[in-house]
Length: 155
Image (cartoon, rainbow, N blue to C red; front, side):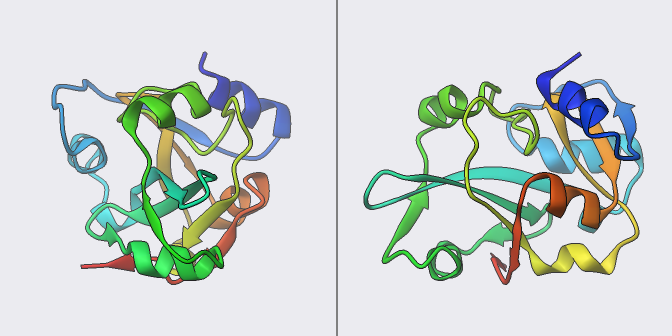
C-alpha cells in the first residue's frame, strides 16, 4: 500500500483503486486515461510548483491541459511561479515523478485544484505510484487536500 492509499483508508472516504501496466516515461496521466479507458478530462495530474521565495505548492489540473503558471501564481498570491525541480518535488512529497499523489505526502503543501474538477461525479488522481490511480469525488479530493479551487489550466 502507498501512503496515499493509507491516507484515503484512514479518512474513510469512498474511493476505488485502479491498477494498470505502466510503460511510458513521459505523459503518465494520459497513459492512465488510455489504459483505464477513462475520459482524459476526468484524469487529473498532480504537479509541484515553486514560488520565488522557494515555497512549494501542489497544482492539480486535467490531463489534456497544461498548468498556467501565471494563473497558479495569481491563485497563490505570489509574484511568480515555476515548476519545482523533479528531485525537490520527489523529496517533498515522498513520491516519484509520474506517481505523485495529492494524498499522503511527506510534507503538507498548499493545494490548488483547477475549477474544471466540478464538472464530474468522480475524478482520477495518482494513488502514489506509476500504474495506480484512485477514483473519488471532487468534493472528497478538495476536502482531504484542503484544496482551493481556482482557474489554473491553459492550453
